[in-house]
Image (cartoon, rainbow, N blue to C red; front, side, top):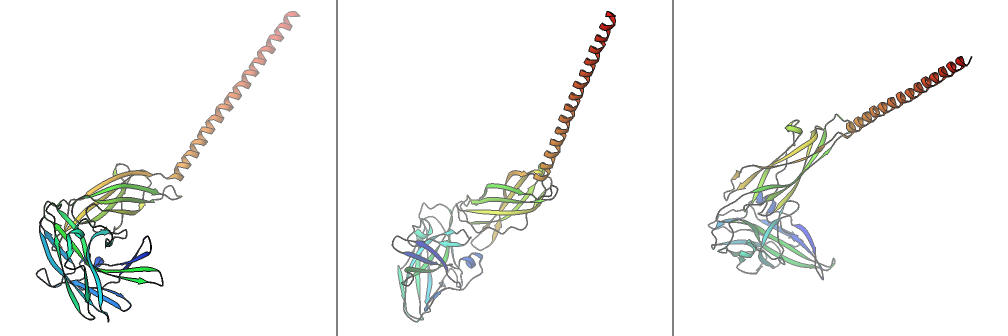
Length: 360
C-alpha cells in the first residue's frame, strides 16, 4: 500500500491539484509488491487490486503479450473502505517517466495515443457501498496496424473533491500499472547522446582533480529498457585511466524516452587532454520477469584537464627567461656602443696628436 503523490497544474478558472497515484508504481515496477494499493484522505478510503482469473490470482500489475489486431479481457477489483458510498471514475491512460524516475500516468484531460487509447473499462464510473467491493472489467483492443514493441499505462480510479477553503479541486487517483507487448520484431536499443566531460583541478599543479561526465540515455528502440552504466576517464593514449564509482541504474525507459545522467569521477590526473567513455549495457525484462543483458553500447568525448597553476608557473618562467635574454642583449649592445665610442675617441685623439707633431 502506498501514499498518493501530489501533483499540481493550473487551469483557466481554478487551480486543480492532482493527487497522482503511485499505481503500485515504484514497487510494481521492481516486482516487490503483490498486495492492493490504497488511497486515503480523511474518511474516504479505497483500494484497488487485480482480479483473480486465468491470468493469475495474486498479480502486482497487468502484463500481456498480444498480436496486432488482438484483444485481452481482464478486471480490476475496487473496494470501498469508507463509511459512506463511494463513486469513482474509471479510465485508462498512457504512462510516462517523470523527472524523478517514477512512472506516472496522463491525467484524464490529456489525450492517450497508446495503451491508454486501446484499453476501455466496462463502465465509466462505479458506485460502491461501504465495506463492499466491485469488479470492474476492461478490454484492451490492439489495432491491427499497431507497431510492435512495449507500451505502458494503467487502469485508474479517480475521485474529485472540492476544497472550498483553498479554492481548489482535488483529484485523487489510484490504479494499477498495465504493460503490453505487441508481438512482432522487438528492437531493444539504447544510445548515449550529448556526452561531455569537465575537469576541475586543485591549486597543487601535480595533484589529481575531479571530472564530471554528463550524457543522455536515449531509448531509440521499441522495448522498455533499463541499463547498467560504467564511466571512465583517461589521459592521452588511454593512459592514467580512472573508473567512476558505482552508478545507479536509470529508470526503465519507454521507447522514445530520454534520461539525463551526471557522473562524478574522482582522482583524475591532470593529463592536459582527457577522454571520457560512457558504456551502457541494456537490460531487457521479459513477460516472466527475467532480465537479459544485451550488447553494450558506448560513446567517447574529449576534454581538457589542464593544471592551470603549473601552466601559469611555466608562463612566468618563460617570461623570466625571455626578459633575461632581452636584458642581456641590451646590456651587450650598450657596452658595444660605449666601446665603439671609446675607440673612436682614441683614434681621433691619435690623429690630432699626429697632426700637431707634423706642424712642429
